[in-house]
Every structure is written in C-alpha cells, then in structure tokens.
Image (cartoon, rainbow, N blue to C red; front, side, top):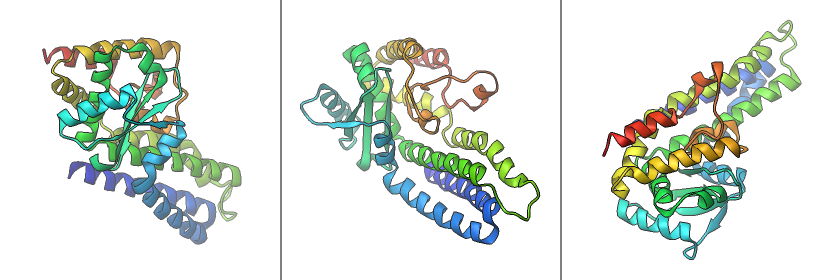
Length: 272
C-alpha cells in the first residue's frame, strides 16, 4: 500500500510538471499535447520501465547455465520469490540493480565488473540485497521514477530549445522550467526512493544469507573499484543501483539517494 501511494504521488507530481512545460510551450494546445505525453509516459512507465532501463544499459539476459543465474535462483528460492530474469551489463564498473513492476515480473542485473571483483559470498550479499528490494516491492517505484525522470529531462530540453509562447515576454516560464526541472526531478526521486529503503534492503540481505559479512565486504570493494572505474550511468537511474554510480559534492549531495557507504556498513555490522 505504501509503495502504491508513493507511485501514485510520483506519477501525479511528474505529470503536473509535464503539463507545466506544455503550458509554457504552447498554452492550451501545449497543455493538450503535454497531457497526452504524460498519459503515454505513465502507461509506459508501469508496463515497460524494466525493459527501458535494461535496454539503456545494453543488458543481456542469461539462462540456467550461467553462475549468476544459479546463485540468483538459489537465493530467490530461499526468499520465497518467483525466479526473476537475470541480466549481465557489459561494463567494467562493479554495480547491480533490480527492476520490474512486481515480484512476478522482476529482473536482476549485474555488471561484468562486479562478477570479476567479488567472491561468491560477496556476490550473494549483493544479489540478496536486490532480491530484498524485489520482496519489499521497491522495484516498481524505482523503475517508474527512472523512466519518468528521464522523460522530464527530455521535455525540459525541448522547452529550452524550442522556446515557448509568444505572448510571454522573454519566455520566463520556459526558462524557469529548464532551471528548476532537473533539481525538482532529483528531489522527487529522493522523496519517492527514500534512503531508508537501502538500509532495509541491506538488512533483508543479511537475513537472507544468514550474515552481514558478505555484503559488508562487497560494499567496500564496490565503492573502492567504482571510484577508479565509474559507471557511465544516466542520472535518472542512479538511485536503482546498489551504490550510486557517481557521488555528488556540494549542493548536489543534498539530492543523494543512497546513504554513505560507511553508515550502511555500520548498520550491517550492528546486526551481528
């Protein structure tokens, strides 16, 4: 119920932003066009967001013969979850995420880099973390947020490039839209994807594998390697990964969707 309310609020707020852009661009006609775009975006977000995000990272599905599939199957069975689809992302930076609208339509994706740098126990902690997101039904709100945030970014660029209504001197609303839409999108994602979900998924992973040690070690390794080999990630999807593909500094740190690694590790160690 909580995630349903979050999803509804997110769709409503982001749709309102799209309508705002439409009005700035073309008045009534712009509103009609923006409303149609919002409806299509919301439908696509619910039904196709997992495919969109996986395609964005050129993820390739693997079958029962792959070690990652076998590990995921073992953990999914232990968690009482349907078997998710399993994907490999062709990227050297170590990271992973889960996506999909519900546990019956879930997918787990991991980079080639994470498979190389983690031991089996560490990788089990990471996959258990992603399955905890699935079990907690975090993945719908994550996928919807990623898709609609990307749509808002695209619409704001459209507003900047094509301008707006001629009857608004200097087109102040279109300019304002461009200036505020990116941080608003980031704040919406932060509100919808609370940092607490990462702590909850970490704790769920520790319970699933029986110890926090594997995930603690994995988080340290992923953080260290990712600093040297950052993931070329779309900012609209950064919140989906087990650690943020890039870290913000200064003002941008206010919009961070992940707790600091050391705080996550401390919370995991407290579970011992």
